[in-house]
Image (cartoon, rainbow, N blue to C red; front, side):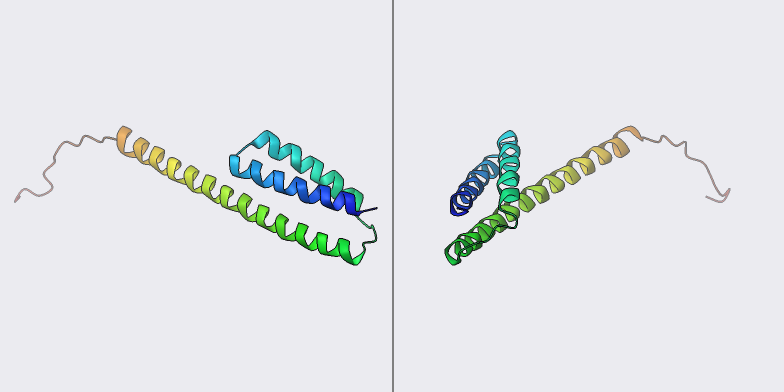
Length: 109
């Protein structure tokens, strides 16, 4: 019966969401691996109409988790860009001090 695995996958997705929100990287990786094994087992299985409804819920939960992941990645990218910009500006403006001796370009000046 596929129903048991579908319910298990749904529970794993909920635990994955909690791990994503808490930033628990090792836990996220563990759930991703477990989720892949269940999904692989479910591939090609015949589903009853009731199981199809559970699958729709699973797809919805998975899309929500995907949005959480994308938001996290966007945050990390922005933070990296901001830090890189600060470090670049510091290096550029902090170390590149050019001392110039004033020179007269024109004798009439």
